[in-house]
Length: 68
Image (cartoon, rainbow, N blue to C red; front, top):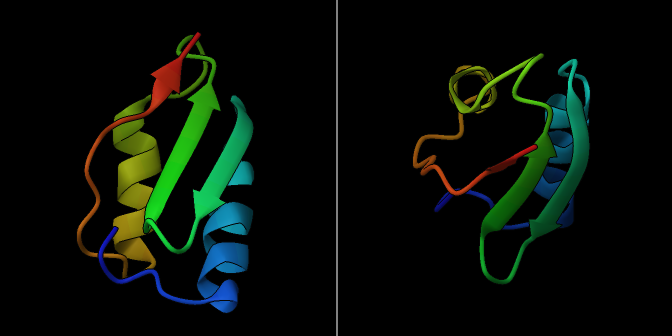
């Protein structure tokens, strides 16, 4: 996520993703501009997570999420 650069972004991204049913863990690394998400693939999927971030204005969302 190339446009995530501050603590406010970290808090916003964490809040957005944790609000999705099935997400169990969100780890945002601001210096590396990465977000690692663990979720239950029976409840949600990477597309829902990606679309949530895109709709919030985060443009460069690449998939590297873990499902269980």
